[in-house]
Image 1 (cartoon, rainbow, N blue to C red):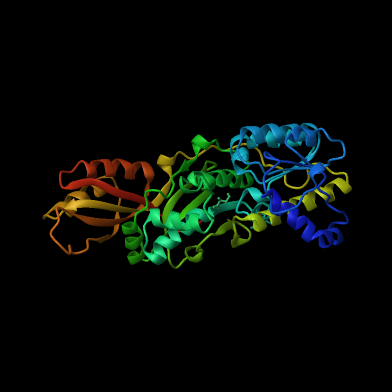
Image 2 (cartoon, protein in one colour; image 1 turned 45 degrees about the vertical axis):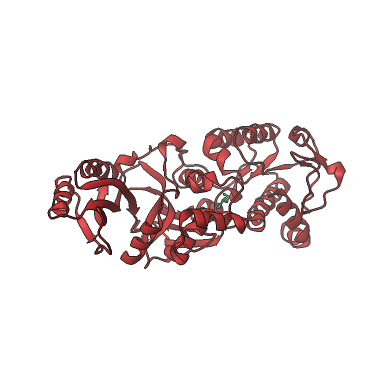
Length: 421
Ligand code: HSE
């Protein structure tokens, strides 16, 4: 990532000078391994393995943190802010874990901390929410904010391949990281959703207050059923606050979204974020959410802001986080429709017993599919689409359904998001 920023700062040096009135010079670069081959040539005297040298250098005005991880990045960013050096970071993990403390420190030191690259790579969503939409109450944000999982789900949908094959393909094409666990377990998107929750509602939810489910369990069968019902499965981040309820909902899960909604056509490694504001209405931001060039575009935008603020001798400017009120909406109380695939014995009365349980729990059935079995089999799939219900209710009803003798243990429960605000 650092190489991308370095390369593009040189590539657009003159444009940036024209626009900002300053030359952005990279004076020192801290790396983990001095001997590693890089895509860009950096003079050896600029390289060091100790980031403290940069933080302690009085000639350096801005520190760009692109090391990833959380604890060392926290130490680096804190030390830079303590030394009153503006910080640009693309690190969602450190913000999700330590964002509250870091923003407090930035304000205490009147030294800005910029993080455009931390959410959705090259899409300028931080600026959009923080600045362009500052006049709005944010009703909802729905985001496809992890490119790797979106690539995998797109390939499962379009090519009919299974999860393992699609993951291998993502690796072969260089989209998936060597360790793609945070992408596929949902937490890369979870960290980004926490940042969007803070930007929209002023509160840093703790990771344990956020519900995150990844895409590892999505089967080719569920993708095909969703398709036949007119939906696509996407790893979706939901950030919203109900009318008259200050509690904040931040969650990430593979969800069925209707093919009639524009987000369903966001394919491959692309990201998209739909923001609904009470003044502007619906907005949609689309683009590359990962990759060296897209992410450097966001880092350089922050560097340009940092340069302008340094020239004008201003510290933290613009948006003021609006308090720390509200609380997390418990996952049991979050509402959506649901897709439930069960494995049932093909005998009279089974559907009626299941419908009885959903009915007793106050959950309506929207539609049912039970494909005619192609060959005799003990269990057959039964797919239900269920009306809006609190997650806790669905989990209770599911427990009762799975306890029925005619229902096998294998099942899938996914949310169906209508993407209303
Ligand atoms: N690995 C992430 C993605 C990009 O696949 O979208 C960095 O957050």
